[in-house]
Amino acid sequence: MYTIAADLGSTNQKAIILKIAENKDETNIELIGKVRIKTTDFALFIYNIIEKYNIVIDEIDKIVVTGTGSSYLTDKYKGIDIIKVNEFDAIAYGGLLLSQSEKGIIVSIGTGTTIVYSDMKETVRLGGTGLGGGTLVGLGKAILTNINDKNDATISFNNLIDMAKKGNRNNVDLLIGDISKDNILNMTKDITAANFAAIYKAAKSEDYIAAVLNMILENIALLVKTLYKDGDIIYIGTMVGDSYVRENIETIANYTGNKVTFVNDSEYAIVIGAWEYYLLNIRKNY
Image (cartoon, rainbow, N blue to C red; front, side, top):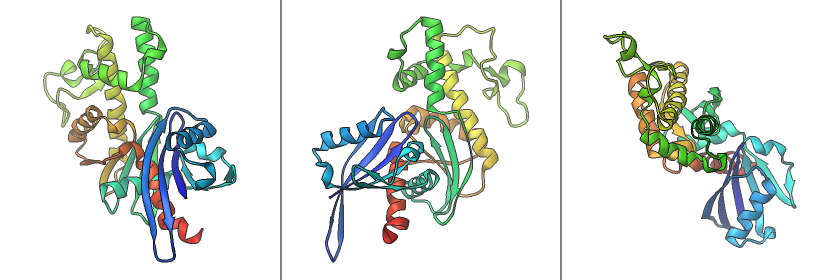
């Protein structure tokens, strides 16, 4: 039999597919694959998985779901049990287990950003922000459409990250060094004084995209700083899977004074967290 664990987000749906063989002595769980589909249509999502892995729908024992899209599902889908896991618990378990941490703040950057604290016994939502990957794509489209009159269909997250790598946000942002010849307290000359406020500088579209990315990551990091409790700060999410994004987060963390941890499979951390939460907390009572 097969089990699907899925994160049903606001713009993408992700899943891990597991083959499970049980007998009276043990349970063998085999990871068959991972998928990410840019859709919010659950039926289409499941159909794609069945087609990709040549699975008969009657062979699916259960579907473990989390994310905002799971709120639209009932307890059954085509006769298959739907088991819902609270998204904050999925974020916590995914971040802590993949980072091998006992406790910490988990920052999940998706379309927007959610910040939780957990010690695996209790999970608390500390806060969040609408800034995230959706902001980069949305503002990126607005900037490029106005500057270059590009077709929206040509503008993707990966395309924007590539542009940011070529850009220089110093041509867009007003820095401490632009307004003072000295550092101000612990703020060095390369720290942002005001986002998008360097109106007297000449900037290219790549510079604007770099500034958008910095604004998103900088403000998330500053929010995390104000919410910090104890333990590690663990970043997960699709956006964090890019090495350039991680480098920018680390640069900002050097200023805020917070040590950050990144995990492998950050894109699937919430899915993995949902599955692990099910195994550890729901399965025994199911």
